[in-house]
Amino acid sequence: MDTGMLEPSLYTVKAVLILDNDGERLYAKYYDDTYPSVKEQKAFEKNIFSKTHRTDSEIALLEGLTVVYKSNIDLFFYVIGSSHENELMLMAVLNCLFDSLSQMLRKNVERRALLENMEGLFLAVDEIVDGGVILESDPQQVVHRVALRGEDVPYSEQTVTQVLQSAKEQIKWSLLR
Image 1: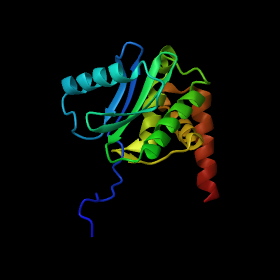
Image 2: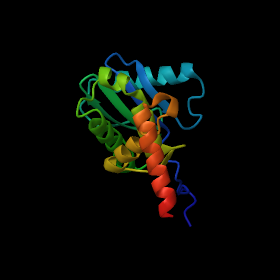
Image 3: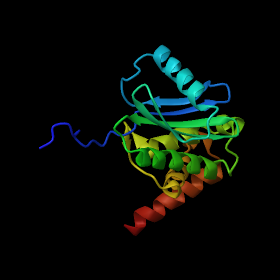
């Protein structure tokens, strides 16, 4: 038996990053302690941006990590995994994130629109990856789940009509059981 083979693991994603045109962090979620401090994370982000912002390729090996990335208008999307990770899996996560945001932002995936809809971004990333484990790669499912979670607005922020409609639906469902 070959001892050089690594054990398979569900923990495939080490980080998800979104940087702007200047390489500044708009969103970053690290799933392990490869870069434990914010200072180290920012240094890594600067390095990754400087190596990738002028190229048209989609994949890079950097600091012993596999980096898949995509740029759009004024945003750079990155999904990072270990050097042993399957690039196609990482690219599936990247495409799912980008396509989900594209649908949620009505094809207007740019810095201003993203900043105005950060809660949707947070929910989408949480639906796609949890603790480094890929949960979903279908953008339609992600958008649907984010829309469902977005409907859970606290009663204090709803209008009277919305509260009454919600109460009617809850009574209807309790009677149908």
